[in-house]
Amino acid sequence: MAVSDLGDPPAVPRRGARVMPLGLLAGSARVVRPLISFVFVLAIWSGVGAAQLVPETIFPAPWTVWNATVEMWQMGTLAGDLAVSLSRAAIGFAIGATLGVALGLMTGRIALIRTLLGPFLSLLRPIPAIALVPVAIVWFGIGEGSKYFVISYTVFLTVWFNTHHGMEYVPEIYLRASRSLGASRRREFLTVIIPAAAPYIFAGLRLGVALAFLSLVAAELSGASSGLGYRLQEARQYIRTDRMFSLLIILGALGASVDMVVHQIGRKLVHWQQG
Image 1 (tube, helix red, strand yellow):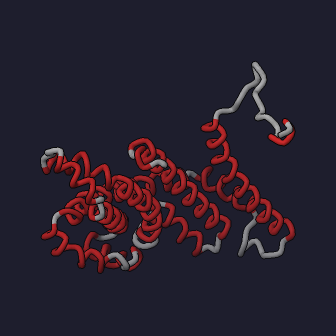
Image 2 (cartoon, one colour):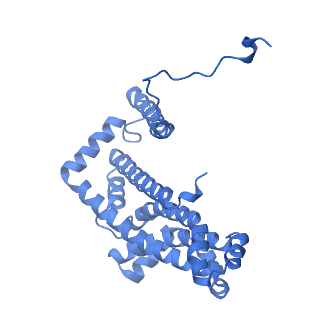
Image 3 (cartoon, one colour):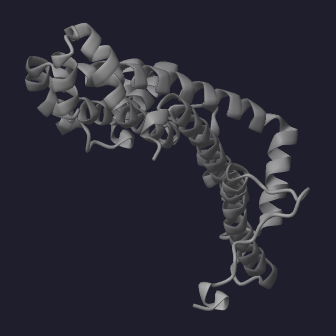
């Protein structure tokens, strides 16, 4: 067989040449891909705005939205609304996630609690957050309590469902192995069941973050005098679509940022699910 038939020999990096690590390449790809998408959409949006294909009052151009954002910031309303909305979302998420994880751990492993509460909680899941706003106002008034209730309710059901699902479907072989090694019920629960269900739990928390911002707007659209949802309602009344777009983009950026943080925490804590 001729040497040429064997194909070209593998390339060998020259001495002193810098080879980019695979992790750095993957990290760069995760940053570049979203940027390409955003630049593409922004280019189309700018083209539509420059060509004036749609009236500004209906579909404002990117520079109009930017000017509206600067205007709200200089007025001082944007910073205050951001602080108020983030506080409401954080408190509502903390309450809902804590209750969801706690109850999911119980309904997933305790048959009596699952029988008593499982069907009822499944019945509540299809009810949207916006439908609970009138009830929340009657129960808690127009103060902060009603907002916390709407947000925590939405987060609770999502986190509960994912936690319950993860606890219920722990592979039986894991339990047999731990029992064959003489592990106690407590040790089995802490070192086998919870780690096996952890990926589902963090998936529920990640969904809960998105739903916290979704239900935040629903909670602030009625009975609020501050917050991003309230400003959206106010902008609608004055037909300020530039402010509407600005607030929607801010909400999306906040939700995506918090989602990314939760995702990275999950990757660090639940590292065994990778691969």
